[in-house]
Image (tube, rainbow, N blue to C red; front, side, top):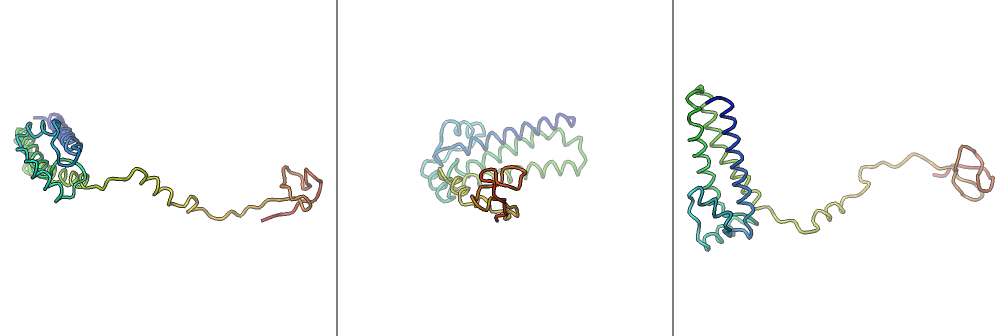
Length: 179
């Protein structure tokens, strides 16, 4: 198996991993088993939990969305095993260090993917105006510094200077600086 074939196979594994996690996170309400998630369970030959176990696991893990963590973990384990089997022909052409790196990467793939899933599944839902309230709480001019500029205005009518002249364009009076 060439390096290009390895990269193509690795890319296929990561695409499948992404699709699996997206499908798991799309389960709504949390812990239910829609047909889209059931298809993934069937594909990886993972047993579906009973309704009571699903609800208990989601409540225990404090999930706000997604499929039960044990089902996702089981699917990730099968995905990693399948990927290892598909990449096995490559290991024959690699050095011992490279082969160990591939094995470690496959193991870490499932661990990191599961941690990512767990974080996303337990995120608190943002309220409708949550982002707007946070933005409104920031001071609009928080980082600005007071201006050092000034305006010349007329002594008699208080009109601002409109041009290059040092006399008022409205009443002809003298201009002075106002802070």
